[in-house]
Image (cartoon, rainbow, N blue to C red; front, side, top):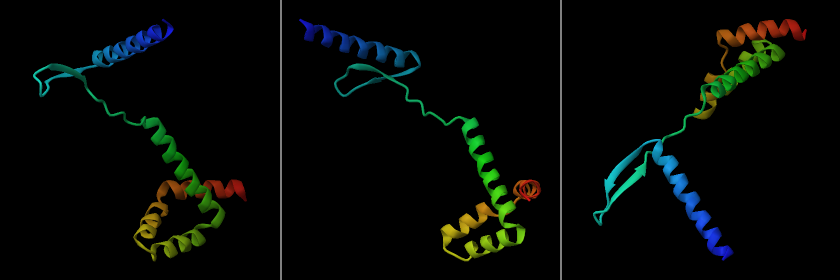
Length: 114
């Protein structure tokens, strides 16, 4: 008796879950046997923009700290060495290159670190 109750509850949860998915939108199709089926629309979840923004700010802060610690000339030498490598190294050199935000952060952080 207890296994029958568990089986019923499992089937009930499955039906409830399917109804919740169908409530968010569905597509009606006829399968090979001629039976009409409703399939939930699959929605692609996009990452939140706030997470990407935080990652970008963190990366720019990292570049600023590295620029402040190494100094502008030494940092430029490291990026030049990286630019002479493989395609992946060249891409890294382009990403790690000094941009206006990194330069501004580096200059301001250098005064704090000195």
